[in-house]
Length: 516
Image (cartoon, rainbow, N blue to C red; front, top):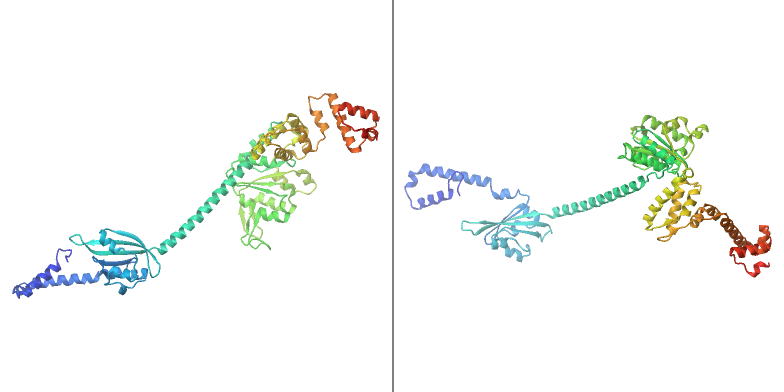
């Protein structure tokens, strides 16, 4: 053993033993030198005891197993027993091969390290407790290059594998959640694009004026009141304002005041604290105003709101803050309000059905959307727009004949654009793949008399129109009354006239019908 100062205690002790055996007087003469050497040996032994590798080994977290070059077990630390369940007395001073025969080891690493003279890594499982380990065997060589010691390190990985499994499961859950969130965002974005890309369609003066007003107000953070009959496209106008506003990247919350029962509308708009009322959610509820914070809130059909709720809405608009039902603390808000109605709010104010102060708060920038019947020139454009949408949706290539477009143009459209949209969708659905939709199909859906359509046909003169009317009238009368005599009486003409006109117009009547 050679100290850090170059002193070899082993060589010193051997030399001293030789001198003692020779009974040499040199021992006496070199007393001081020998004493000094013994002190050094004593110090090294003290240090060895202080830094005993066994003591150090027992403080390691990983298992430590040491064997000699023949595979004889020399030492195992406490962690080895903790991990494997095998006590030191069961293996120390025993050869690895004998331990294998006893069934304590399977596929040991030590013989492989001795054989290959290389580091060996392996995965193992304790036969005692089933704990899984990462096993690393390291050879230690003597001066001649032979394996004199084998150091085995056992690292417990059962907990690590469990943690890894938990981590993998967590990552899988996170992945599922992330995928769901991505899909949810994509769906929302898809619906948002579909919902918000309903651009105003039309070239009439009325729609041009509406478009101009949208451009004027979209960038200004003011309240807008959109008015118009049901189905005129008030929501589309609101979408246009939002998409061209400075809040287009914020939330856009829509509330249909007519679709929510009056007793629930307040909690939907303002939210409530937990336990605010019987049946309230234990966690409370965030209202639409809070959801729309830093964005836009559309209050559709606002004319249907109760007077009590109108008062609360007015306070929210005035103070720009909301207090939840059952709450005491108000929450500051930054919300742009767009209101829409098919009611004449001014008349409702006169009748005491709508608060005058709220009306003036909402009526800062009014936009009135004209009814479809007053913008006939837009009907064909809208029709083609919807044809394209539903052809794409249902995988068809339908078209509408010119006379059919004339029928649509001259219809009164009490349901406005929404009615036109529904009619076009139904026509596309019931038509064949490449069908040309006829005026007659449109007449049936709109419940229009075919005589009206004939008046719209520029190819028919007065004689043709009269002849068609006579033919259809006689055919219908015959189908109802069954005989030319009864038809003549109903139409107040001679029976012979009915027979002559029937033959002239190509109407088939049997002999029995002529004489009844």
